[in-house]
Image 1 (tube, rainbow, N blue to C red):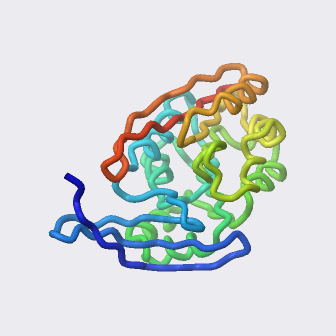
Image 2: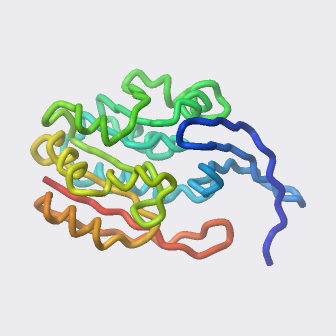
Length: 228
């Protein structure tokens, strides 16, 4: 039986990419509330089903012996960053987020866990397009690159994000990784073309399927792990 819920808008912002909305999901008959993030009306993520955001960090951290420097593309609601920072081996974590409003909501506590995460002295937040950030980053400047800026190549929130999954951007991600480094890409669906592009750029590529339940629906999310 589907639980009846109501939504209360918490914050809203407009940018050149459109509308960003954070809203609270409240069960009508009581129970835990949750936050949901939408971009131009498209579901991006919520604070209930975050297992794959966490798994993304764990998958990356498991394949690199010394993940001293980490680059995360996409701030989201901070769950991937939280898992990265929980690893004591990490000395530096750069987060690239294109939406200034999302950074502000995290910094000011609109997202409750945000202030503590951004206060970590290892964290640097850069408000930029991740594709441009990868182009400009120094060679071999990171041990891990984690990309979760969209719903994957098959379900783009913004058409311009398609460039992130194409060979030039993936080659830039490969270039900024040091020896033994790894790239992990999150996708809301299986992405064979992405896998093929990764295999043409990296020495080793593995895929992970994760079965999840999203707001009472069975879904499958995918992680693509590419190693140098």
